[in-house]
Length: 107
Image (cartoon, rainbow, N blue to C red; front, side):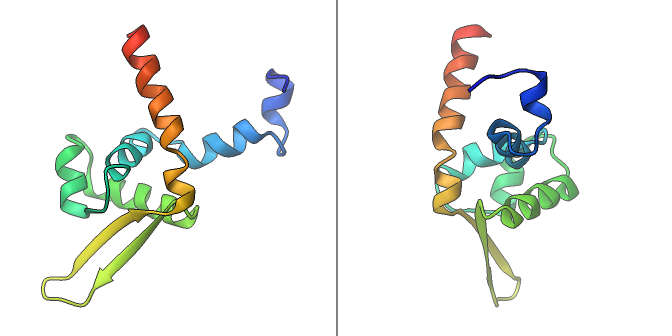
């Protein structure tokens, strides 16, 4: 596959489509945490120091909309909400692993 400015502007560019799913300052870190298993909102927020509740909510909704995770709401008082990666989301594990390896080698 030829990578270049022309390839990145075409809607059929697979790299562009993939980046559109994982784009956002916190998205890859949310994926990293969810690769470890199901998490609740508070657990995600605690592990991502500095993220605002609104930003976390927005990123989780984006990932849910992309089919990367599912949100399970339990009818309890107080309500309990859990987030779990789908098969599509777990497939991003190799991407997160590659980013971690690059970060270890080059930063």
